[in-house]
Image (cartoon, rainbow, N blue to C red; front, side, top):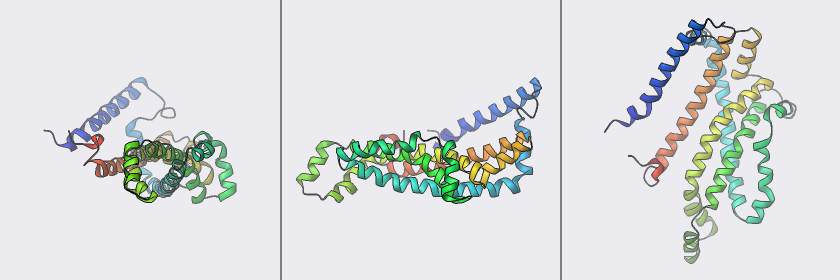
Length: 255
């Protein structure tokens, strides 16, 4: 049996290297202007040359994403639990939770600056707004999907409402919760970058400044840093999922 590391990381790494080589060759062969599409090697040079700017910006964006995502997880789970307590409560308040999914973050980002001021708070708010709904929706779906027979069994043995929630509903909903976190992790990065476009700081400002200077290679370098942040968060959620579910859920069972 092949090591799990090889099966997990070698195929995407090989695909990345082949795609990068093909892009380098194709862009050079077609004579595409660097202002339109820089070569991967030019993007790599820009990332190395501007590392003193990109890395602190990445750290600032990562901090805003981490705070926004943590708020999404905490408040999203609380809202999902509250909505799962009663069908009436769900029907009365769930449509308002959908607001966080349909709100155009680009349109309200200037309002966030007015409400929270320039800087970290506005960026965190943007990351929170775009990432909280997947947590609510997936957690609620998991909480409502608990086997009715198990609910009846807990009631039969006189389990309290908290005991049913802690020992039955939340463990049953955990796979759904983690699925919501996977989605929310990527959306939090998007929300933070949009928030930085108007609120200042982080990779968003680097992108704007590079665009003003017509440094397409630096734009791509900043975008790749943001993508790497999103991938790191996704990998962290996957690792958490594997650790939490590997002993009992088929989704994480070793082949």
